[in-house]
Length: 112
Length: 114
Image (cartoon, rainbow over all chains, first blue to last red; front, side, top):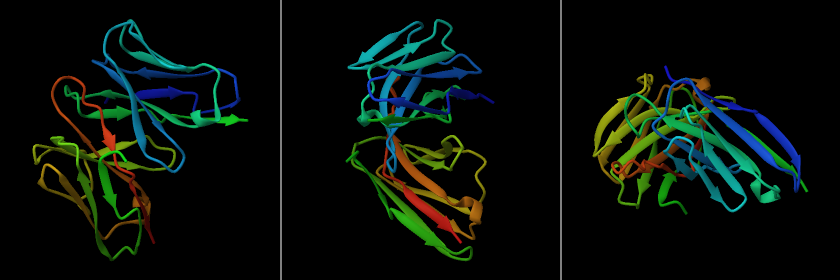
């Protein structure tokens, strides 16, 4: 079945440093979604990427979708303590857009 | 507030108990989901209901029984669970169609099976 791998599993940074998490799928994806889960919270949708090579920005967050639509990345510039949490990527499988396979996530901690 | 409400927030039950988790969405969505989140494992899709019809049962043991009486309410009935079923159970909803099936999650029920 489809697998979605995320690296790194954990990342600890000093406040102000940059952070990147990478997501790789074993199959070509029609789209990829990113979610953030704060400690003790629930996943919250961040963004969806659909087009090959697509780049989207949300303030200090930059999301990329690979040309082959099998990988994606999330880059945070100048991290802040509010960025702490686990970042998940997810891609649809089984020919439907609503059945998502999630990666294990990258837990980001930020030292103030 | 995400528009998806789950109760209870925490649940401790013995292996012989029967309990139910409840989810309600106020977003007008037509699909609802149950996900299981365990430590060190990815989010696992358990069940999907599309317009009240169950369209996915992801090889979930029969001790988990979903119920979707209408497009706004979703239940997960639990009986004779095992300690390994302890996890965070998340309900989610989405609006199907249009290619933007992003999930809105509830706050989850943290379940402990003793």
